[in-house]
Image 1 (tube, rainbow, N blue to C red):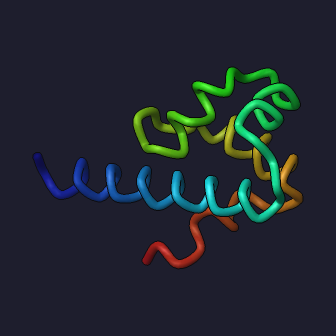
Image 2: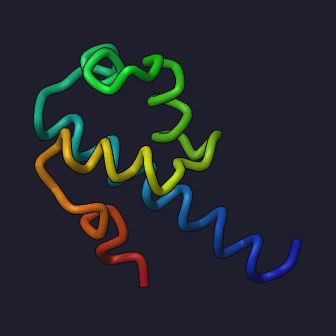
Length: 78
């Protein structure tokens, strides 16, 4: 793997962790988030575990649902 690929994987893991932490802080289940966003709870779990890369549009929708900006999920990555 090259550095760009490694960096992207690290970012996916970081964002997934931030998504999970925020969901837990707000007291939502995977099912509740998925139902409110029209995404399966399995897919939300894949985002949180960095098994799937969350798109900018989906990250925006999740951020809105959580009452945050998309930038929130990048904070602390650098």
